[in-house]
Image (tube, rainbow, N blue to C red; front, top):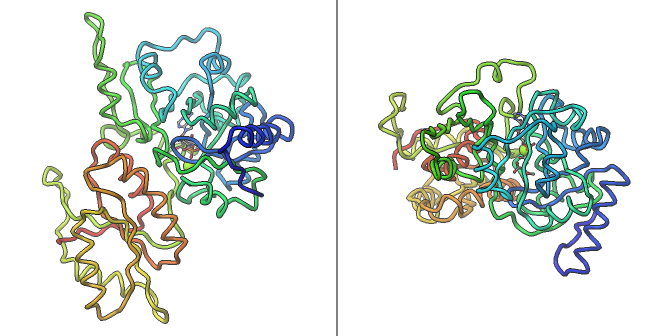
Length: 389
Ligand code: TXA
Ligand code: MG
């Protein structure tokens, strides 16, 4: 396959038409940019087309897909006629659509085939803001079921080149819309519970703080502000974690082909279960020892531009008994969590491509986009070490 550019308008239109033909006539998935990550999209109403998404990614059939729409009428075409969104949903849609927020709605198997929802009673839907994604959905005139455009278990692609490297041999069309602005997947929200509270199943591009702010705004008299509960932080979903049809969260995710180690450099004193900090030097020695010998070691590190780890790692590379070359990847300033989010997957994929033996990554504060960043880092990391620097 060939990466089709989405740059000049004539070229863009021709590329979009080719992609739309793959979707509507050939019933094949195409790779497309969204503002979060690249997606692998197919006609959400066509079960065979959706089946090809699962086979292309090697995705387990029990992990449901998000459906992407380009308009509110298209949203309603997927929902039971009797359904009207709650005030909470109306506020979230008004504030965050188009954009990186996915909402669960009641599913009707006559409107959305059960392969999309993995037979769950709900269907996840979002309206992306990326102009190429919106144009492709509108031109195809059908909602697109689209997971991230990566082989199952790998980090999500945030550039067309990432998709080409991973799925280029399996996908006929890759639309190139440049680097994704958000860089992490959408926030998945379930607001269908009778208690009126909002449950965040997956933190993502829309922050919990922003959701709380929007829900607290413009209250009618006597109206209660819904609580925003984050899965695993504020509540556990025992049923979802135990059931054989558990969605995405149970699988190892976001993992490059080499080991990823999370370095916790500051311990939260409010948490009682914190471990004892080990000296960085001792941690690095044991990590280097765990890499099998016989070749010069390349150590990858995802680092903030202002991280104290950078100087410590450089000093170590000059003095270490087991010699290594350092391959740093810049995550921007530690205080800029949206930039860290934007660069995280690119960093994991770039260092993997450079053939490093191990990737180190420093923890970030779990505020704003940092919550979603740490959610992905914890899933990518095979081990966590608590270090003193
Ligand atoms: O930003 C995004 O959401 C990207 C772009 C392409 O739009 N898509 C994406 O899709 O991340 P995917 O398939 O990689 O992740 C979808 C997540 C999974 O964790 C899945 O379990 C969850 O959404 N999900 C989908 N339908 C669900 C449902 N009905 N109930 C609960 N979780 C659901
Ligand atoms: Mg994914």
